Image (cartoon, rainbow, N blue to C red):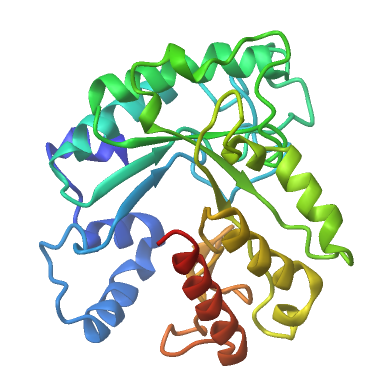
Length: 302
């Protein structure tokens, strides 16, 4: 997409994006979108009036993520570090004119390669050596946006250190740094064990006496919306912890289907908050619980 924008000298239209992604079926799907969204047109490049968080996932477009996808770790088969920083820097600068641009995630779910795709050690010193220059480049390009730092092991731990000193006070833009975690422990039966893990793996940075006191956001959690998963320990535990820790969160995922996923067009997403054609909630009971979680989280920080 960055190359498309650079080659065109501006944003790519929605119509052209559909054509490129879906091939011969692109125009047919685009017409369905136009039918249900008459505010879109041939010249539309984006829908405004929503907050934007840019999240860098894959250097080569594909479904994310896995240990053998070539995008796992710095220097992996498709993870060219120089191009990664170039892309982050470009998007940070490109988005400066967006009034609703608020943050950027440097890399989604860093993980250990299944095979030796990278010559760089999988540890926190390597993380520090690669992530901090990228964060510096982003802040230089756009000093107004928040920068989300993800951890190792698919964003499950955020234990900064291990031979590298991470001192928040070293950064002139320290008030722009945010830690992010993901959690998908859907099979847990004890909330206390998950609470302890989340706290020790990152949320302790929110504690008033933390050495590096920083905001921490649970940027991914979710569960099957097509059954009663919302009643199980995982969902109810998350609902309890987020207001308790007065922290932000984002649920995965809203989309009830995909134009294309892993080569399959019109792919069903049973974890989606909305149904297949996005016309209604997939599970009203689960949504009512989510709405209560929103209310409780907002009350905890006001």
